[in-house]
Every structure is written in C-alpha cells, then in structure tokens.
Image 1 (cartoon, rainbow, N blue to C red):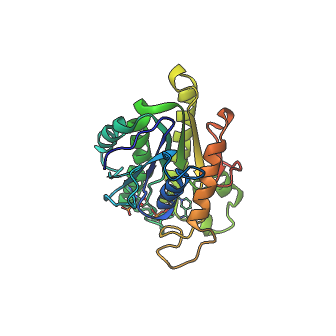
Image 2 (cartoon, protein in one colour):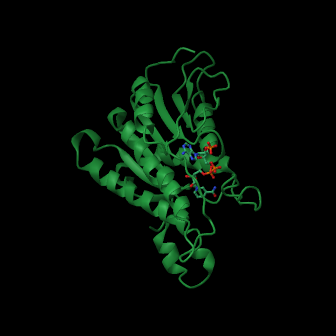
Image 3 (cartoon, rainbow, N blue to C red):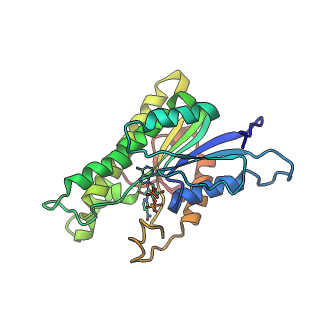
Length: 258
Ligand SMILES: NC(=O)c1ccc[n+]([C@@H]2O[C@H](COP(=O)([O-])OP(=O)(O)OC[C@H]3O[C@@H](n4cnc5c(N)ncnc54)[C@H](OP(=O)(O)O)[C@@H]3O)[C@@H](O)[C@H]2O)c1
C-alpha cells in the first residue's frame, strides 16, 4: 500500500497497539479519520500502530501503518526513528506499551528481574519512543504517557497502613511514578526551548479497564471498557491547552494527584 498523504492530514503514533487500550486508541483514531468526511474525502489521521510483534490492525485502510517494534530493546529508538521520518511531522504520540509483572512483590519480597524488565518497557521504553519521535514532532504536538493511579505517591500516602493493597505491586507502581517524573521533566525541557515550546506532554491515568492487564488475565472484572477510556483520552488530547503540559490527568480529563 502506498502511503496516503493529504494536506491537513495528521499523524498519530500509538505503542502497544495490538490489544487492550492501545488497540482501542488506534481504532478510535482510525474511525475518527473519516468522521464527518465524505466517502471520497481524504482521512484526517494517519495512524501508526506500533506493536511488539507486527500485527495488522489496518483492516485495509491505506491511512494506517503497523510496525513491529519492541520498545524494551536498545535499538527501538533507531528502528522507530526510521519509521517516523517517513511520516513526520508527528502530531500525537501515545506511549501506551507497558507490562505489569511481579505483581506479588512488596518490600521484603522483590523480584529484581521483573523490576528490571518493567523499567525497560514502562520507563526506558517510553523514553526511547519519545527520543525517536523528538526530531519529528510537530510544533504543537501532544505526547501522552499512559500512566496510572498505581503510580501516584499521593494515593499511597493517603492510604498508608490502611491495607496491603496499597503497597503490593511495588514493581509496577515505581515504573509509573518514574514515568510521571519523566513526563514533567520532558514538559519542562520542551517549554524552555523555542522549537518545542508548544509541544504538550501529559501523563494520563486511563482508569481500571477490562483488558488482559486490568482483568489480571481474566480473573477479575474491571469496571471500565478500554474503548470508553480510549474515547475519553482522544477527547482529552483534542482539548489540551498549553497550560496543561506537565499535568497528570485521568481519562476524563480531570487532574490526578501525583
Ligand atoms: N488495564 C488497566 O486497568 C490499567 C490501569 C492503569 C494503567 N494502565 C496502563 O494502560 C496501558 C495499556 O494497558 P492495557 O491494560 O491495555 O495492557 P495490556 O492489555 O496488557 O496490553 C499491553 C500492551 O503493551 C504491549 N507491550 C508490552 N511490552 C511491550 C514491549 N516491550 N514493546 C512493545 N509493546 C509492548 C503489549 O504487546 P504484546 O501483545 O506484544 O505483549 C500490549 O499491546 C499501559 O501503559 C498500562 O500500564 C492500565
């Protein structure tokens, strides 16, 4: 398929786009690409769906590209950079790929292998993706780091001693807390430079969703459908203002406690 290029067409990149929230985010932009546009019109969005294993989510749409990239691999930045150079400028970048492993870990019982693998994907993977996109970002691009309430230090402090549920998952929690810090560092850095001043970077809590991760492999039922969360995040992205850069928001667009 030849790349579709049309004036006014924007590019969105989603990682972890083969299942769960990432797939729903890619689908939301694939659908939104033609919303309110005549059948013979040009799509509004080009969607770059990045997954660890190449997975075809295009459904025959010429404005969708799928790429197989493992964000935990040191070479991911180079590999993604080559892809993004073809489709620049990148208007929306959604760092969604993540793992939630070593769930039983609490202080005194930490699996360091799981911790390392989690940081490789959830934190360093997200940074690799951002660094790959950096030279290709549109002047007013939006970068979303998909975080979560389990990364909130404020929430754990508020529940201190209340239950072990607030301290389990130390592996996953620390990756999302680190991702939140990466978000504010990037937002501050971008604001300080002329060429990136208008780029907005936010951390977003997508809510507790019924995905492989949220349902703990199908053993519990989470209250939120990932398509609902995705719709909220797409609306949130469309409505972001310059002063929102550096914030931690939930999928409804409300501010979350750090
Ligand atoms: N589910 C929840 O309730 C919840 C709550 C708060 C925050 N979140 C966050 O929301 C995001 C999406 O979660 P989800 O529930 O959709 O999770 P999920 O169903 O487990 O899907 C995770 C996605 O990330 C991809 N991925 C994992 N490691 C990767 C790697 N090294 N390289 C490339 N892709 C990789 C997976 O690809 P493979 O198929 O190849 O493994 C999959 O597409 C994550 O950032 C998660 O931390 C989820």
